[in-house]
Image (tube, rainbow, N blue to C red; front, side, top):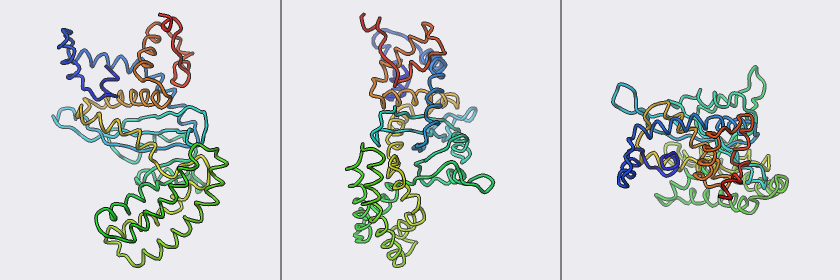
Length: 337
């Protein structure tokens, strides 16, 4: 039921109808109770994934809207699902990937600040203003969080202009950024040291030329037009866009976190809205576990079914780490059976 709803996008009322066709009458409210019990059993695993993610010093973050029923109003409100992920395969590491999801009833800037209250390291993020306070150090000192902006976002502004009208400047900007992506495809999976050396030798000169060219072109284009706004967007964030050249573990863009939000974007179209804020918190638990299992090469349903079975049979809480996706192995008794 959990995997069908949160991974495959099958709402509970639809699952109830499917079961009824086979002569199994289970009311939607009963399925909802099962979902709640599943979240209770699995929350300690989510907490362990959260601790692991927040201990990494390179993260990717993003957020996406999700509708939630507003109590007593008969209407829905727009809440958010935030994600915070770690993708070490980018630089050839064998450390486990993971993705943490957090629910909030709104998109206030205090939400990511609360989620990342104790975090220190690099943060790949888009230009959402709510992140800005994360980069301001306390008492005049440097912030423990260092921003990495998304080149894909900068490219998108130029590409949108190029795709809708003849614009040689936009075409050239896209081509220049494309050279940077060509380098990234070549060095994906290499060691941080090798990636850093290649970027310093090849990407940095391209970026310097692009910066000088962009400043010159900006003077020719009004900021009232889409092309002018594209130049303004890139130049206003230039240091953050170039930050990925400072550390071989960093990425040129924030696409990892965007990819990990796509499944939510698909499934929310099917179940339309969540029933409550508590339902949003449960959804974040399940998205965390299912996505992290998939990132580690597991069949999410097989892994979750086995984990729930072991927990129900009394798996010790002080050995909960054994059930994490990157530590999990099939129960020998079940494998024999």
